[in-house]
Amino acid sequence: MNMFEELMRRGYSTKVSGTWYLKTAAEMTRDAGRPLMLTKEVYPAIARLMKTTPTAVERSMRTSIGKAEPGRTNTEVVRELALGMIHHED
Image (cartoon, rainbow, N blue to C red; front, side, top):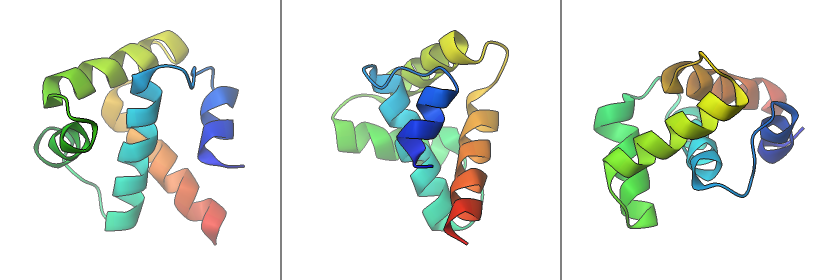
C-alpha cells in the first residue's frame, strides 16, 4: 500500500495541504533513519519547499489529523506513517 492509499484508508483527504505535508514529513523521517524534531527540522524544511511558514505547515497538519484521527498528535502520526513505510519496503 502506498502512502496516499494509507492516508485515504485512515480518512485523510488528499485535496488538502496538510495531508501532503504529512506525507512529506513521513518521507523525511523515513529517509533520515531516525526520529526528527518536527518544530526544528521538519516544519521549516517543508515550509521552504512549499514557500510558506513553519506555523502554516504545523497548523495544516494538525487540522488534517484532527479531521481524520481526532485526539492524535502530529508527532504520533508522522512517526507511525514513517515506520509503516519502512516496514513496507522490507
